[in-house]
Image (cartoon, rainbow, N blue to C red; front, side, top):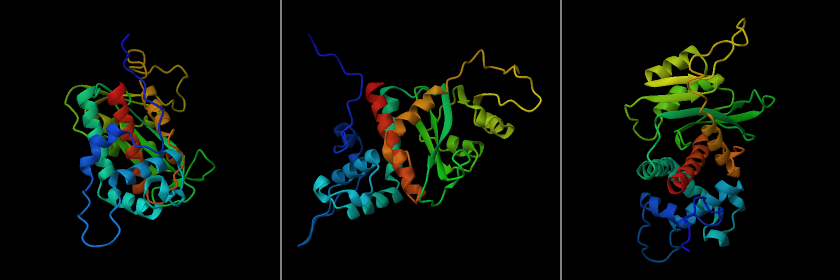
Length: 280
């Protein structure tokens, strides 16, 4: 009997970057200059990205990486990571994966969902704040927008003390590819039920499906337009967050620089989209 096609991603190898993923993105990285004379040869791009892959999944410190593991010392690994982050390579990796996903599976634009997740940030830094759900400890928020299947299309990082409604416009404008002009629905929980959020969503061309937030004086069984006709489709964004926090470096923010942490999130989202393009 013929072997059936596997529809489930294989177990992740923390020490090895997926070969198919590397093939899709290797053209983004600058080629090493030709070595002239004596001296140490430049580190291999794939080895460095594999080291970043290891940090993403394990959450270890950069200095904990031994040179024998990937052939690159920890200082070079961290320095190259910051260089690539400043060049916007991780955002480009996410964009390439979203386009690959669009070719393989087609982006399901009709129903989209938006949500956020709190993460502790013990070291502080920019875009952190007192987390109102964690005894005012320092924390950050990850905001994402996903399509109908849960593929992340936009990522934004803010402080934990910033309300979700102030990031809606930035998330919508930050969608990594061009949106079509067809009819689109946007689902959100009751934390986004504000008049200014409804206005932003309407101006962006969406039909809003935001869970009603009960006001003072309203009856418990207040009629909510559209809740019966269009049931909630917000679970896909919660599932995407569960996929993200499998990577231990995203459970707690240890990066003082928000751009570095955002780069790790973009790399993780690119891998999620890559898996969805291959396995559905």
